[in-house]
Figure (cartoon, one colour):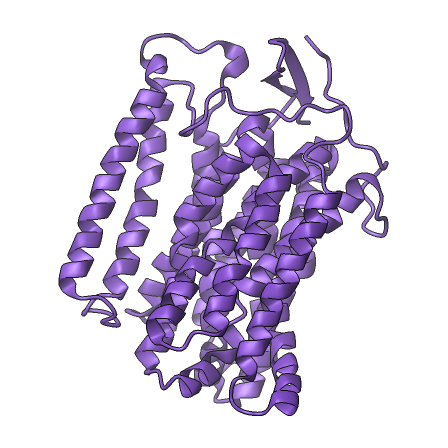
Length: 499
């Protein structure tokens, strides 16, 4: 048995360095940054898009729904592909191929093309998963939380950067070309940059440090489990992803924005039911050996660990996606400020990502994964409770302070979640990250649907309650300790330190 896995060159994690593993960190977060930049390149132009194409408010809102729909299954699929083929080729493919629907969206002449392009762009939002696996192969456990946090936090800022930079770019195009199509050129430019970066990423990134092994699952086709109870638990956790897609279909039905007929929505419901049954059968056949033979200790992992982290990411990233989209309106209606001021106040939530998510990962490395998650989850529950009691009688400065307080714990919690994911089983990190990442999107769908039915106060309180559920679930999480075993190509086993 090998006593260790070759670690990366480049010394300690240093964000001021562009050598060794630090170069991979920077190339990784920039790839994630560009995927989010393109994924949300429509956000600052919703009004202009509606006016130039004579869209109704419901049609514009539908674009927002379509933008996140495909990301739920895409993150699961991309996770499996990453474990099988490696981050280098998978991320480069997402960056290059993702530019195509970006271009068709930018130059769409009818609503159907616009909507289909936005739906397909949800696939770009799955790029996040790839970098999680990439960082896990380049950074040791003592630095992994911080590296994953920097990757996630700095990359996630791409959505805010799109809101700040693309309107300025559009003004320049308007001055040069004239007309009302400047938003088209700005959106297309973001796709060009992402496509060009795919070449750089493919050229300069390696899956692992020189001399290290890239561990792959022994079988490909579905998620591997290592016990009968884990199989049933996995299928329970698969179900909410299908239910979230059904909820999205309902929002597109005559009961929602009426983009689809009731007959079409019923067909979607039927299709999702058939797909779940198919996945159940496929997963059973893929894992049927666990119902017959006991899996050797070296190959085992505890799926419960993944399930708990799914719940936490539902509450953290799910609430972030939902809150970012509604916060400007919350400040506008609660304090009767101007649209510009409401946007500035709301931006404080997104800006916290630059330090909060890396901070959550660093705290995990420094003080332990479980205790950090417990403290951060308790903090985000308290933060959302406080946001739920904010009203027009409160000083705006205090409301802003509470917003930033809540944002810190939410985003630090995201960093802490992905400080644990790569320490469960290295060869399946992509699949775990895909499923947990998808749960973030599931959370956003659920929370935004709840928001459409209740007041802001109830909305924030619901998030606080789900955070409490996550806090309770955390008591069943096992602190990663010692080493995990991975099988080498020659059949021997390597030990990977996780503490």
